[in-house]
Length: 634
Image (tube, rainbow, N blue to C red; front, side, top):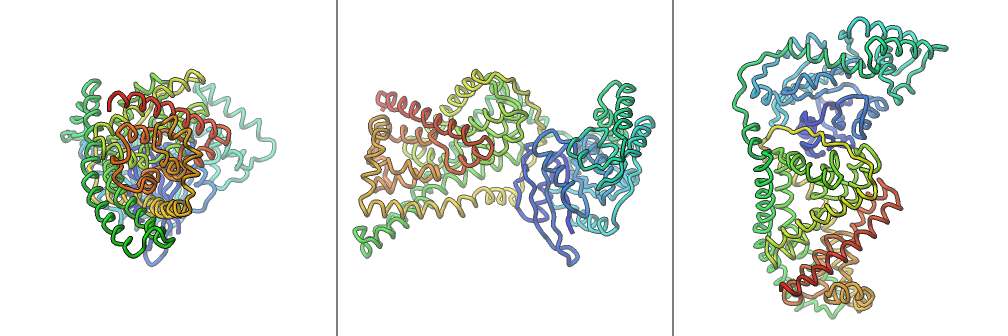
């Protein structure tokens, strides 16, 4: 049996999914985060159930990639019941999608999620009356606390067993008359003929291709469309949309009762955090505190852990000296473990927890709102903000999410700039080098430099491509205090890629570097790269080999740096200027292979090469400038 979770963005659908199936999908306050559907299985009434979490959508008539994924899945796959999840506090808006789904006459239940938020706003919903009007079961839930989830699943199971349902909701008489006329043209469709007729009026080409019409009925269909459009003065697709909107408002007024809302915490806080002046002040404080907290937490842990591995390394060298091949391999393994556990995790863990917390409480979309004015000035606004913020976690999903852009120009510019955003891997390098040796404020300075570079590059791209971008339309959710369970699960979801993928690569790379060093090959590689490392950047020649590993994973440059220099006390062999120059070059130069693969997938080979070469040029300019300035400062 297959259950479909369908709902609008921010209705708590993914949270509900994770309560049911474990933490398999990232929940988020950003519209359109779940770009591809996620599937998991669980047992119910001794039967294996597949549950599919589809991307948030406002309609089956799609306007972006995420909505197309949902529409296409519904029409191309078998399922037994739809669990339509609606944010109870915005029921009137959510019902528009509900009414559209009902037109398919498939087994369906309505899940009134976040019912606590509705009650806080003074909205009391009569679920029994709502069920009678819609002719489907209605269940109240509080997804993030697991309340009502079991009842929703049982209801969905029983509804699926009963089979199809009849939709009794009807539009106004003249619109229904047009639908009836169009129904006569429909010969065959995977759903009912009325739904087919509505989609023919909405002119959804994807669905229209799946409808088999009776012979010689094209002229009738064109005539009906023309007649209803002349009668209403607007496009037939808009007529259907307005009908659903009117019905949704009417149903909401019938089933909802209003009382004096409780004191709204979100409004009180937003008066400060979203203020046109003070909002930016608190944004700066929050960002400053966030990165300094990551540094303050990571620095002592790094020192403690690396000391343990230093002792272990010295102990093993008594029995397996690095002059022997086996000793070289063991040394590389220990250095890899030290780098992954001792250097990377102390910074990436608090960074990931902090990012997940800011996302869960609902502050990230508010950051997007605040920086929208800044984005306008560089010609990038609207949906571009969301991928750029996402890129601070990882560039790959940020680039993949650019497929939601409205045009190819915005897609290219956003993906281009996303490669300059310091992801969590580059954050490890920034915190592990600049943060540890030069201080948290210098680490924050690198992020400020990065923002300036992004602004300049955005301005250049806008001058080259002057196609206008749409303005920002983003849903600002209420503040929600995340549960420890959801926070820990989301943190693990983001960390597991490092643990399962990056960590083994770090160890293997460290061993490879030890073997290269054992066979005296590092000198050849370093000499080959010395025109860049030594002549342009003024770095020790030994760091050249680390840049090669950085293309695989950015954090490998830090890990391999210890190995290449033969010590984890970097400050004893590199000056402060060299540490700053090395870090800046790593932050800006060619993206990692995963990011390159994502760029090629979304933009093609030519544009990927252009972006990669540009990042190298920018990295050389920034790092060389830092070398000149650093020579005067330090």
